Image (cartoon, rainbow, N blue to C red):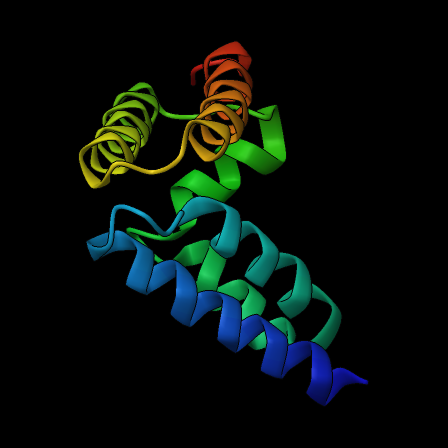
Length: 117
């Protein structure tokens, strides 16, 4: 099982890193999941991820206080709005737009109701 946890952790880490450059792919949720999976598979990988100067602080903020960095909140909001605007420009059907608006609205509410560090 440890190998499966580690493999899934590496996959989540890769998706999180890709999410840094792709605004449609979330970064921090994948990093948090990778930390969870590494904690169950490899103490070395878990420590490396949490002590990483760029990837570790958002995970630590979330684990210790359930907090999200204010600049990450703003970036997430801009990305969500951009995704919805692209959907409007593509002319997606109203039902899809409604589902997307409701889902993205819930995500925004969740993000902005979390404490800031």
